[in-house]
Image (cartoon, rainbow, N blue to C red; front, side, top):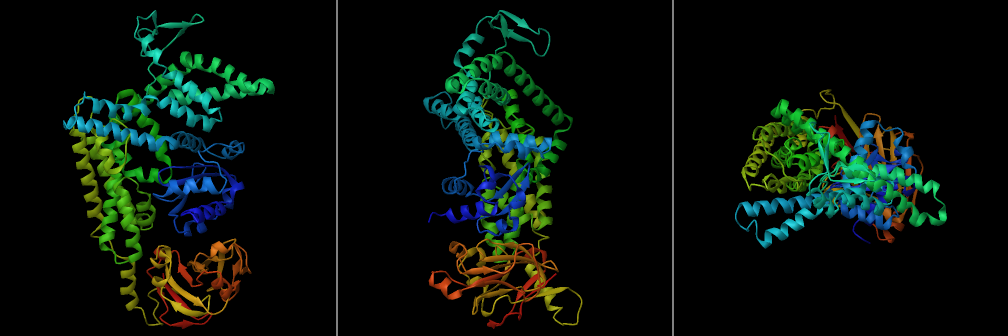
Length: 639
């Protein structure tokens, strides 16, 4: 079995199955589903999967946060689950958008167009930044063959960016992608530069900000030629317009000649109108957007940096950061640099500063196992594991990271740091602060100072105040062992299974043994039945019957997982007696299973019983007994 085949199958099943999926894309850390009915998705079950960090719903997308392995999981879903990738919109997509707000539609549009190209976009920016850095340090000759070759590698994507965006926009607007790419290619057609280099016939709008030289006419109509290399808005608007034209011709042209006549008519109409009207108007719109962004920044650069830096991680959580991507790219295309969106730079380092403080202070091995990879990912700019796995569940520390990030943003503005190309994240962003025109390294050095200050401030804010929740709980529990005291509220969970008690650390699955999914205990069953550990509601019942999630009437969230990898049995040897959403009483039969047959099939039957909202409690204390009977006291949670 391939590495992510089981995870891919579980994710698709828990989002409501293949038939519930309209489209699927992914970014650096998240699978981004468009679902017909989000109500069919099982949020808690998805969050409980080993390999899934959390679930986020935003802008009409159902986002499953995976982390660094998201590309591999995405590829496995596309390969094994029969779901088309690349974000192609289905016919039902229009209906799915009806309930979306204008902001949600804008975010959905921007993310859909830019997500597929972000990896190559960042890589090209990193190469351009590295080339500028090596030239500034005199490691290579800026005019030599090595620099020229590296410039070709780094510039190729950006020069033909209108073609790339035309392709992704075609997927979004449902236009023939090759027709759309032809429109994008027309914007960067080499002869346009030669024509623009000649003497103009006359000038339109002379004396206004929109003054434009006219070099050619088409059917007697003036054509306003502009430089569209590396531009963002013109290609997207042109493809939106092109999709409408193409759909019109597809409706009116007879089927027998559609194959070639629809693109013939589409290109003959769209490309001239793009060069004469759409391109110039979109370019002017881009210049206005850039001017507006700069005007906001100029009011108070430091306050702008404080705001964007401080709230950046919140923007990322809700997907709102996508609204800033075109602003940054547009500023770089119009001015050659961006001074505004770059103020988010310190957020990454503030986050990992807090994570390092927690990593050093905590004695919780489960939290340590989360913090180490989260810290490493954050160094390279991927902060979702840090946010969702470490700081956000401990809200105070997430707020502290935002404070440090705000200070970092204000410093970016104070030092007047500009980003000259969209490149990598984290430490890979340093070369993007090198001015490629002058080779000035000041921005990079100041960027290093900002990252260091943000990191140290995040660490210093969190380190003195952090207290390990488990440690607090232990000290408090010592003073409240008398059954008569009411100093704390407790809930006692009964054993849902009879058998031998097994420490969680001995369970042969890291997600359980490391406490990643929550604290608790495991039982080697002596009988094949699971009963309710308390009065509760069934929140999750896996279709295979191998696991069940409950929330008790007092608020404890319980996961009972029968055996290891038993999902592969696809329900064989399991029989559920309750349904999802059903209210159950303590001791009520939930699931029957056949332990011996499960063992004969090659699967361990050790059954973890976890309190998945462990972070909501001061302590989760399992029994010290060696064996336990059904309905005996198994776990005590201290609220």
